[in-house]
Length: 248
Image 1: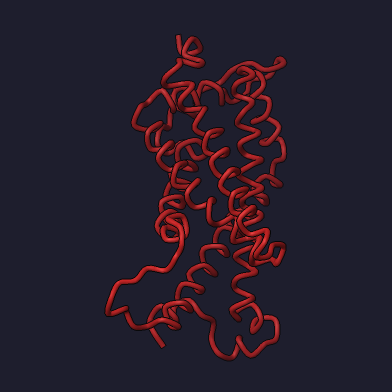
Image 2 (image 1 turned 45 degrees about the horizontal axis):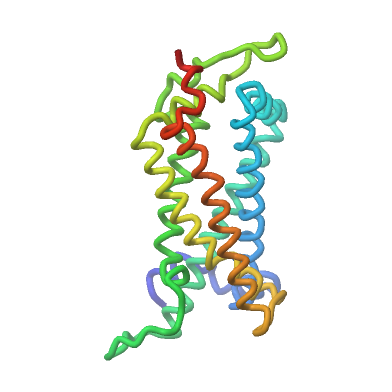
């Protein structure tokens, strides 16, 4: 057994349990990756819709942020659930990678790439960069580790003092290096989703040979629409000066 296998796979005694055995079978691993992928795609879409309140003005996005924080402990339960989904998605993806390496241990004497897309060939690379981006995003806008002064940004909303999320986002994306990193990471996220979404349909058995090209086209459309949606925020701030008057 390779070192990667030993670190990733559970002990044989656990694998003998019916449910655990199914989870760590080839179809079980693919199903977990697909289901966690579906959950993450829905989160990415929902998160974008929430972010779009920025274009409606300070009160709307600040009210949206206040509504989330009013959930109290439930918000942390949701965050922990999302973190668990991400961990499961990465873990079972790595298991599948190890499984594929076992099935094809020898490198080809002559390089003859399979007929596949650049999106499929870069899945592991884009996935790791996107993970780094998520960590940076949480440190930047959630934990305020990149700029601790964010915690001091306050404003009035319906007679109550609240966190000024609007000004925080404007300040953050006014930095060209931050905006460039976000846009680059979102570009790689679109690459990842272009193949990932179509793979979800195939793994869950909701497509066939006839529908597959349509699913692949739809997956790419969704992925690049998400890219345009997310990228529109830093571009609107950095290039078109959205919200700059709030910094005066």
